Image (cartoon, rainbow, N blue to C red; front, side, top):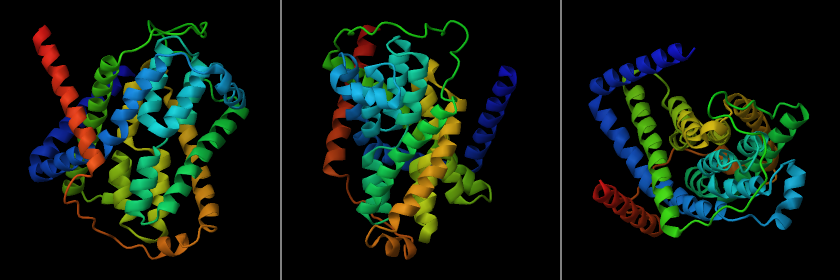
Length: 352
């Protein structure tokens, strides 16, 4: 099985290399688009949350405040409840990183790690409300509805899987296997420089995935006769939402909802990267399929009660949004991230 998987990966890499050589201009455009996306959107949205999560997970959670949520969601540890709240704000990358950290540190059991990914894997409010709702669909209130419906679909999918008894995944075999439960103890505190250093590493990994799949999507659309919107949605969620929104009409709204539910290959790669031994692809795939159905229903019901949303969705046309300069908040976080990355690189070279 592993040999077959390795051969397929090798074949895909060779094919992509040939396509890049066949369309170098498209590859360069995809690389530039991915880099711009990281500086303007990904880093400002994720880097501060990575730092905050490093600091918060190093301290004992407020168990008394989180106990009601813990009981309602059927979680064994207050650490998991805190991680769910952070994931709803920080997004899928924060969720996967927290699941991997807490499980590898034996602070949560395997079942909690699985439920955390089912409950917490979502796009952050900055992307859904600001980018998809406000910028792409032209209606911030519609973005708020989509974000709220997204969390409701997470809860609904988790409830259905729990009723069916399908929200459990066997622990990985081999040396990564761990005890199912360990007494929760307050971990050692983290320092701010250490949190920033870890956040830089995580942010670089996310940006690497975004740039790679942007480049791959641009090359595939240039060389092969494939629909650009479908290719973008399959590979990378932000490009998929942008291309789907340009279609106009209800296809824009429900297409973006579909991209938010199924995530895309880039997001799945990031989740696997950060979650590590806690990654549960089968259970998570089933939950995202349920999420797709629930989100479509929820948005269809809610959008009828939203004043002006129906008109916006029915008359939406393709739009071009010129970006003359980087927003001030993105510029500040970009400078901080680059300074931290250069400082870490200097430390690595100096130590060597």
